[in-house]
Length: 324
Image (cartoon, rainbow, N blue to C red; front, side):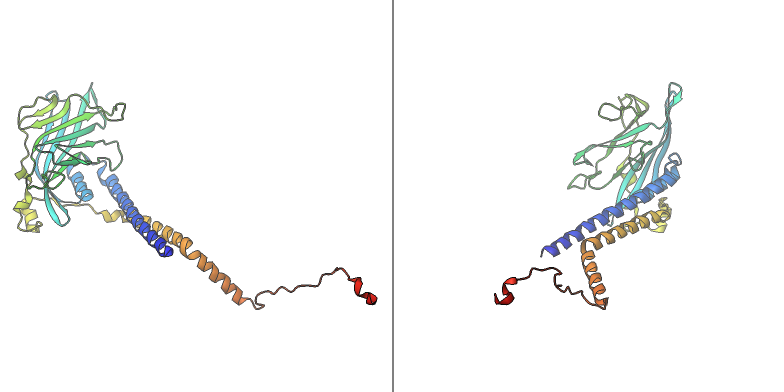
């Protein structure tokens, strides 16, 4: 019974390890794609968004608006793109919105800041966004272009009309997007290692007067729920080719097959390790016994018999001599 329990536990451990190893291999494939096609293409919007479609499994996106902003003193520039998106999870298509920022140029003291860290924060009307184990009314993404994949590898906030994003739990009510702020840091950190952001925001946008100090301030900024409700315009659960064309949906994706070799190499090495480990743990003893038996059966002399030999020297009993 114990033998079968050990075998069962071993199979369970190998199954879990297989899932983990495959996930790590797929991660390496995504990282390779990001490095090859996205890392240096942040300001090439079409290329970068195609990469987002590829890595995040987005079905499509459609531009709602894309505006380039410049501060009054021409020292701060950025492009803000708002896109309606569609993403399928568990065979269900969800509407959503993507807020994407690029073409950021920050000039201070006559010098352009290289690789500024950006913190995008969207204020929601309800605490529907799940961060860790709690729900909050602020969805935040920190983008650090100096970090390796996948640490917030895109300067974008994704919000779906789904649980843990915009949907109020146990309700059909969708939270609204009330305000967007973008803070920036030059990379300085406090004692805890958290980034220290400039007191003046790079951007602040809302559909009302804004009191926050910001280099770029927009008081007629608004994203309505209707503007990204694409599924309501579809006849079925997924857009047809005709609807993709008519609605102007972008479905372009890159080809991850180019990097499938990373998965094959990892899984082959893993399979060899598992085979070797399984052999050592469960089959090596029996194989060695079979080898010994086979060798013994091939020996023409058979097993060696040890014959007791007479000792060369032994004591003589003189008590029996001459009848004594």
